[in-house]
Image 1 (spheres, one colour):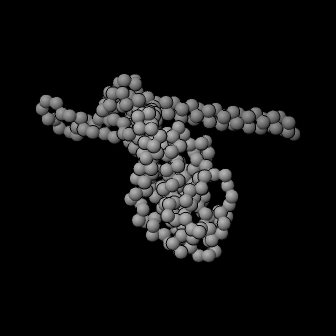
Image 2 (cartoon, helix red, strand yellow):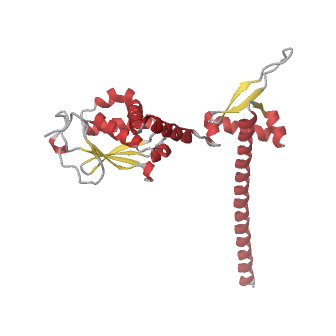
Length: 274
């Protein structure tokens, strides 16, 4: 009669071997992925430092095979991080397609960082020193107005505050703010999940304040800025109450008192109601 315990032991050994093999395969896969990522960064950096450069030159500089280099270059092209141009012909024309040279796009350069935020902060500091706080405020107001200027007509077409809030969210999204508006309690909540100038606004809150004033003007009602990315919050959140009549367009069901809050309330000039 076969020894059942022996078979069970063999089965355990087989299972452990399969498990170990799977673990090694996963580890190998992770190592390869990390290696691929490191090589792609090296290729991108060479394009940054030497570009425009040919695939042959990249392969020679990094001691890689031609197919490997082209795989990474194709990936950079597909991601929009690199582009190509034809190499200039030298001497007599020869048959065949001209060689392609590779260089990084602006999107590819972002991989290596930039100093735009630091430059903007330095410029605003200089403006404050030479023109005073009012100069920064005026700049912030002008920027906020320019942010939504081409969307004003479309936002104004909204028949209610809620409709205008949704139109404003779409306009902000088009400017890179990843915004959305949703009904919450007795109002609309406008959330900006991204802020392209958050680092600068951390040192110059005038940028946030100017945005709030423009939102109030566009929506035709006062608004309350509850949170900002510049202050460390997850999103810039603006409460848009539906309780204040605007141009006689809101239904009475929307006219409820706004919640009490310690945040600053902004009421556009000329729109106060007694």
